[in-house]
Length: 227
Image 1 (tube, rainbow, N blue to C red):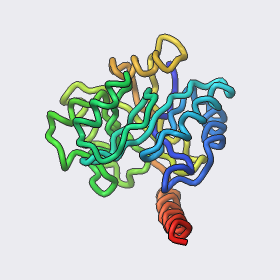
Image 2 (image 1 turned 90 degrees about the vertical axis):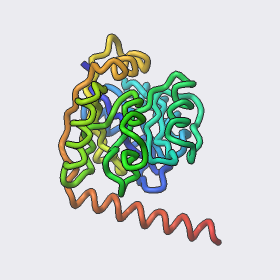
Image 3 (image 1 turned 90 degrees about the horizontal axis):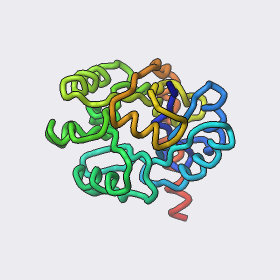
Image 4 (image 1 turned 180 degrees about the horizontal axis):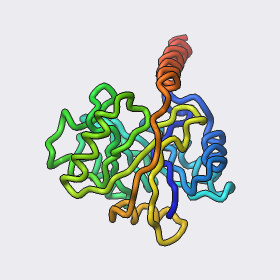
């Protein structure tokens, strides 16, 4: 059984704080076996993270969080960046064309670009897996909705810290019954539903700090681009 972080962000995300080396070091320090850095609409840092992961004895999964027209979709095991703004169905097609898997994070939280409000249940059920535990949800209601949906539709279930600072990597992880320590084995196990979720909620003070830091960094980057 491998413990895998499937959802975290580096400084390359507009709301992330830390470079990938700190994320990978944290993953190794808390005893994880694999990590996917899923920056918003960019894949570049994830390649670096995957290479660094290997140096730390971890499986590094190249990934990103794609902003589809309906909301966020995690793309894992891809080689090329999936462009934002495509329809939900086209986004999944682009991921699958590369042999990757599509996991829908926080689907029932519209305030964080969850897709459920903008697509049919049939479309949501066409994903490879549903993130049923996201550690940054404050009440847990949306997590419970995701859990019920995944159970009702027989979909694989995953968890993710959704960390935007390195200290929170590993706060919620997916336990994967993989045949070996490799990207292919991890992705196959997720596709086949050989997963369980483990984690705890990010302390609300840290959630607010992550969110506030993200707003500050977006403003700073906007000022730099303006001038």
